[in-house]
Length: 284
Image (cartoon, rainbow, N blue to C red; front, top):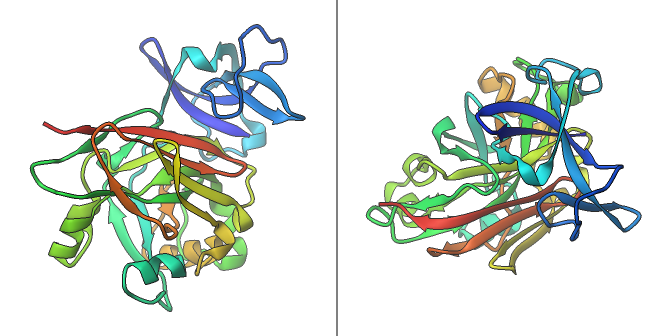
């Protein structure tokens, strides 16, 4: 089930994204906004069925609908959650650790991104040109927490996961090097795009992850290459801090990180989930 947060006029709501069985909208393929070609190669337009309230703390199978449905092309997708915190994991792919000049750590390396860094599908990544000379993309799988939890055993990790989405851990690389720690480099407003929606039924064990800039593939890996898998990360993080519904865990980026420039469109595509797209603009 794909659960999205969206704006329609002045209203903000959650909804379930699904194929429109009735048709009526021109479809143009899997990666086009508002369409899907996931079923037997037949393109169908997508609609969003509005939910009552928010879905967290509820079994996704038990969500309640208002009865209102909108063509996905007619709504604005927002960041699918407004987390209390974003917990990110560094150097969780061995090839990325090597390209950064180090080895993969024996334990997960954690850092935080502020909630104010979160933006959604189609929102701009604001390049703070007065403060940094290099801003990099980092495509990642994001885990969305579904319930309040602490000290979660690895074999119970699935119980606290609401779903998964795509993320971009945008980083001011020169500031990361200069500061010797990562808060400023990764904490700017707009430096954590997530979306386009939450896929509640994805299996994170072995998904293809691809990051492209202006259509050119820059990163390509599989989540099976992560040094520490999703259950390990949830157990490790929840030993340190209480996780709240809607919190986000970023699981690390593979090799191939690189710079962005004004006007670039960066996309992060994860198998079985979707594609997150954002354009880079200069921040005044």
